[in-house]
Length: 168
Figure 1 (cartoon, rainbow, N blue to C red):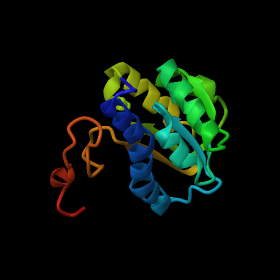
Figure 2 (cartoon, rainbow, N blue to C red; figure 1 turned 90 degrees about the vertical axis):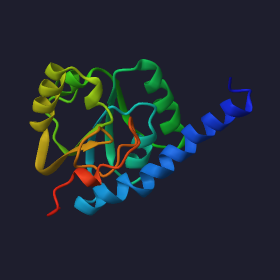
Figure 3 (tube, rainbow, N blue to C red; figure 1 turned 135 degrees about the horizontal axis):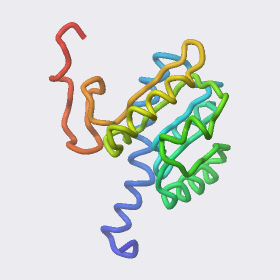
Figure 4 (tube, one colour; figure 1 turned 30 degrees about the horizontal axis):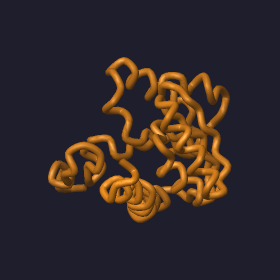
């Protein structure tokens, strides 16, 4: 497939479009709330590492978790290609509390993953990670279909801004 024109286009899109999109939307949004330079970040649902690269290249210290081992191998290669030192863990989000036991984070980010968890997994992962926030830390949900992010770029590819209350 990768030898075909369609395959090469898909690969190029995966390698550059997603990373550029994150640099232009998610990074400014997060940085507007708190500086990413020197921040400690726990990223749940890092996938193949586009988001991990976008976060780490801002000067953040990133601990990234994903449940898919093959995706983590790509993330590892991607971070290495960008010269970024990131901690990567193959685990379910419910194991994050054990993996980073005793650590505190400035940002805890659930990246396009909550919708893939059972209700019980969500509740456990959310509780465990909330307790890992440092003083003034931010707990974020990104690209998971929710009404607090303006666009669903993960499943429906539709804007959510019409769902928001008028006073926001």
